[in-house]
Amino acid sequence: MTAVELPQGRPIQALPVRRIRVRARVRARQILCLVPLLLVTVVAVRHRSVLAEGFGHLRHAEWPWLVVAAGTTCLTWVAASFTRQGAVVQRLPAGRLLATQFAAGAANHLLPTGLGASAVNLRFMTVCGVPLARSSAALALYLLAESVGRLTLLAALFVAFPDALHLGPLLPDAAVGPLLLGLGAVVLVAVGVLAGVRRVRTAVGSFLRTALCEARSVHSRPSRALALWGGALAFPALQAAGLAAVGQALGLSVPPPHMALAYLAATCAVALVPTPGGVGSVEAALVVALVAAGGPAAVATAVVLAYRIITVWVPLVPGALTLGALVRLKVI
Image (tube, rainbow, N blue to C red; front, side, top):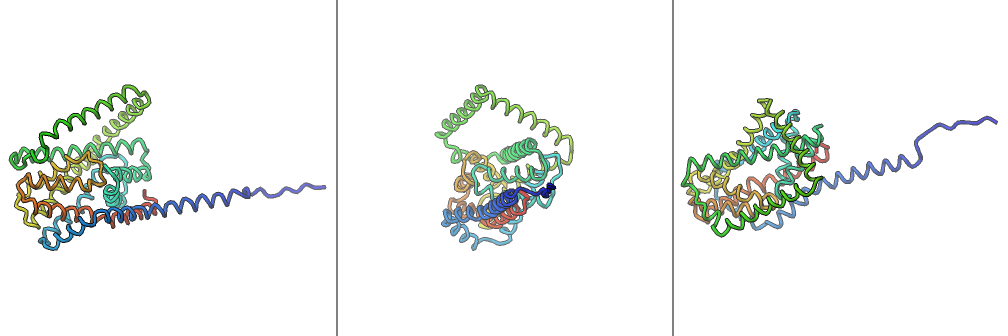
């Protein structure tokens, strides 16, 4: 009797299991594409009264100034792209980088404390081949540069216009003590965790070494350093210019530099408020800041609502669609 060898093939169950896994991944990606639109709908329904009032104010505005505000809003995504590229040595694809910043803006307004934009950009860099450690270091460098740029502009405007803004309404005396106590408590907890938990201390030390190495590499290239710090200064400047343009469109009796100063002070004041995109907290702080700069409360409220319509609500749906498309195309 002759033994017959059967051809070696794939296990009977391997192919169906693999197909099931592929289909599950495809289905999960399709669901993720719809999540941004669902979140936009929820946020819009919750703030429908604000949307209605904001669009009502836009009908009575001077349209040339609104076009300027829309243009500066679009340029903020370009500035963010330059800053993101400047924070990493590896060259990122320019078109996809710009589209990612547009999508990250929508994600930033749907998740609290900037988590949306950070997650989108971290995923984008890893897909582009940047190791996770270096991507995280680049993200930290971007956040540091953006904060330094915003505070630098704020300090420069304070020096140039020392009487433009009265800080009393922005920071009442009764709030100084609790604010300092809160900051002190956060610092003490952080120091305690670093001192008491060795694993955390080791992870933080490793991250800091990687971040410093990445920062040195970036600043050894003049083009990267110029993109990083130029974009970090341009981004808040363009945002402030957009608010000043909306103020001009609605006839707010506050000089544009004073409006820019009010914007920077208000956004710095609410930077630690954990709300999605600062929705609610930014509006309140901007109104208080514009009133502190000398504007009437009613007009200041109209300016802030119109400004947030242009910069947040109008780009939100296209940004969510772009985010879903980037997920579907595996760009992020």
